[in-house]
Length: 72
Length: 297
Image (cartoon, rainbow over all chains, first blue to last red; front, side, top):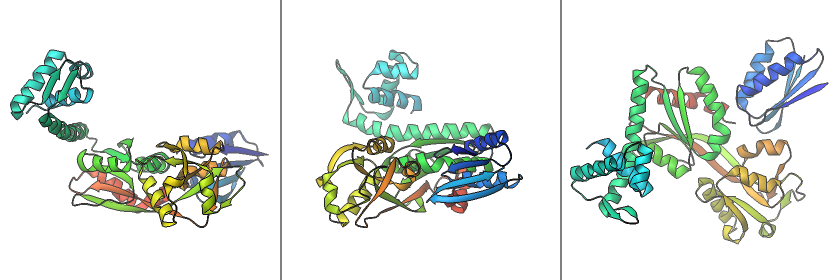
């Protein structure tokens, strides 16, 4: 199951807070997809989730727009 | 000269009315009149014509009004900086930014800056580029973000890199590439001429032998958001900066249209008054020099 959070145009720290909350609610094996359009948001997500036991994949779908997939 | 007398005069001319000035300054009308008389005495000039249709500045008053705006702006900024200084928070920073930077690129940068430099109070206002330059030159604003570049004997300019604008249409627009001649068929929603981006649009079009006056301009607006909604609704085309349309491109409510390889290139820069030293300002400039581009999206 994929949970999607759209964070386009939202500024830090809102996207990370939303992602954290959703991630906590998720079951193991589920995927969280976060769409962000600011590099610092991407960095924040990477820093936070790299410390957790999950796998993460980032795709730059448009110039300056990233889809972040986090598998719990 | 008492600065509050100057303020009373400034507000009176601004509202063309003594009673409105009195209301805003929480003073009585006779007080305002006295303050203006005292100012006229100090400056040895008659500044106001009093008629039964209201009050109007004399030519001398007009001159004083122009200066008063700058003097009061500078003075108010000095008082606020002083307050900060006394409260041990030397970190008050005022920013005046052109709309695209202010709305789309700056919020992130500021967040990261505030995370690294605690205790900072940042005041941001959005203005068009000529006003930003004026604010930094005359108004005591610390930092300005503008389209293009501006330098003079007091102002330094740091380029922030190159950016692009594109022809845009609604998401379900079918013709993803158009010939120049076809542009004349469609309605255009164009950024208002007060915005510096408009000049770049006009110059680029002209370099490709397109006269902007020949386009069917349905609406000119200073608000990029309202242009976006009109274009997304399929009412016509526009030319907009990429940083302002990323979200709509992703959600496919807008799409980019290629027109014979026409590219709208422009730059943003940061400007500041190099004659005024302030720690928070220098910190911010260093931050932008070192990391700025990473946080500009």
